[in-house]
Length: 229
Image (cartoon, rainbow, N blue to C red; front, side, top):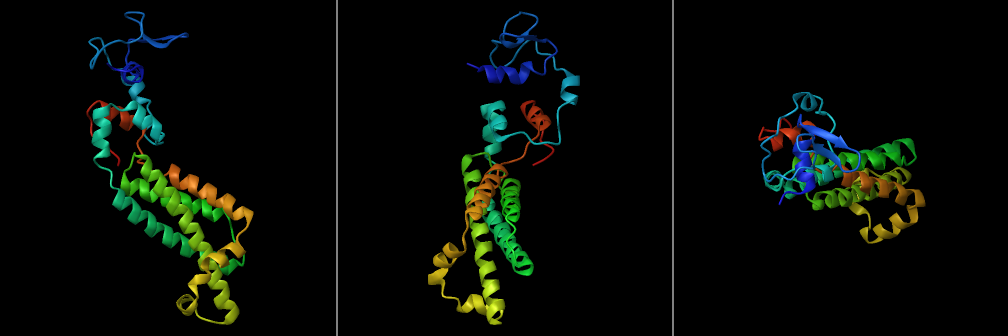
């Protein structure tokens, strides 16, 4: 049996829709909420409503999983690639960490807002190449974002040590005693670091899912090929 949410995917774009303040969208032909199975014989698409759909701003992940039929949702999930998502996420995360370390060493101060940008960059990369809808993609994005921030902090410390001792950066990396890594990070950590790490994790999670617009959702439900991936 179709759920109310599944019915509304059709009703909200039908010319026969009407609004009841108590129950929401109803069919003006019957005066009742939809109760059809699979296909409504009275469904007439409202082209004006479809034309007004947003085709720029992606909808939230819960809207995608909640509004798509199970069949179409499973078809999208077949395009998911967790290995690609992890590879791209780590690659972007390492580059971002290096960039943050360079900026920190050059300016002599740690700009916490960069951590947020790192989280977003990692998430966007994972979302684009992984095309994920499952929660694991967001979890990976959050973990990699935090890892990148910690790596950026560590590389910053290496840079400061190299400058202080007049060593080369690669030389310092090569001869650093990595058994002290945790202790060094602990000594240099501050409350604000954890605050920005948390935001970076949230950004990494948020942006790690496939981006689909309202218009694309409608086209997919009406068996039209998505024009974006």
